Structure formats: structure tokens, C-alpha cells
Image 1 (tube, rainbow, N blue to C red):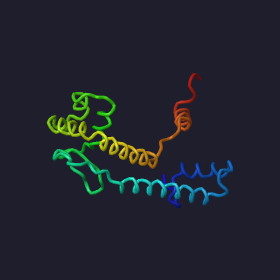
Image 2: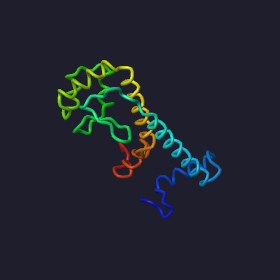
Image 3: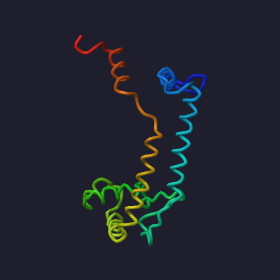
Image 4: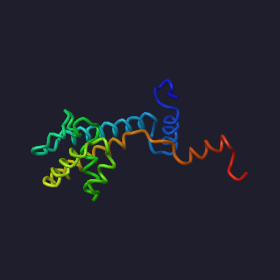
Length: 161
């Protein structure tokens, strides 16, 4: 539920708790700090994206979108997902099993390319992982275990009672 201020009831409680614990002098200061952190993360994502990794002679089975995202042509499977498995030591069969929508010949061509350009492929993987981590930090967190416990107890009573 969103309040008339545009802040969810859960976030409003969080702000009140943060102020009452002395973490911030006021609700407005807490909101300003939160917005500052969001801006910093968005700027970090944009900075990382602007440092596009050039994959020399990229095979035709791969395509680069305007935002730098590289995927297997005709699929939504990102190259970095395959690279992650490859650099973790997975075999071609295991990788294909994980991504069956990537045609096996395309996967084999990409893996052959990766083997001959491992240094730049690793940099691409690291860049995409950093972007993914920043997006995860920006995503909404679910309720804490304590909140879930309270909800359960409100619905079903205390365990063992």
C-alpha cells in the first residue's frame, strides 16, 4: 500500500525507525540519503556500461545491442551467463543443458571464440557481473525473517502453543 506521500507503509515504518534510533536527524534527511545512494548506484551502472568491452571479431552467432548487452542471436540468452558457467569449469554439454534454447552449433562457436579470447571474455563477464550486482542492490528487498515470523504468528498463532 502506498501512502499519499508516495512511500509504502513498510518504508514509512522503516524511516520512522531509522529516525527514532538516531540514524538520521529527520525523515527528510533519511529520504535524501536514500535518494543519493540510488543516484550513485545508477551513475555507477551507467559508468560501467559506458566502458564497453570490445570483443574482437565477435562471431555472427552473437549480437551486441545498443546498450552493450551481448546475447546469442535469436535468443534472449546473454553471453555473460554462458561465460560464467564456462569460467566456472562447466563442460559444453553442461552449458548446453543449462541453456537449451541456444543451438548447439552456436554454443560451440561461442565457446571456441571464448577459448581464443579468454582475457577479454573474462573482462566482459566481470563487467556484466558488476552491473548485475548493482541492479540487485537497487531491487526491492523482501520482508525480513522477523516480519515473516510476525505475519505467520498473526495468522496461525505461535508455534507449539
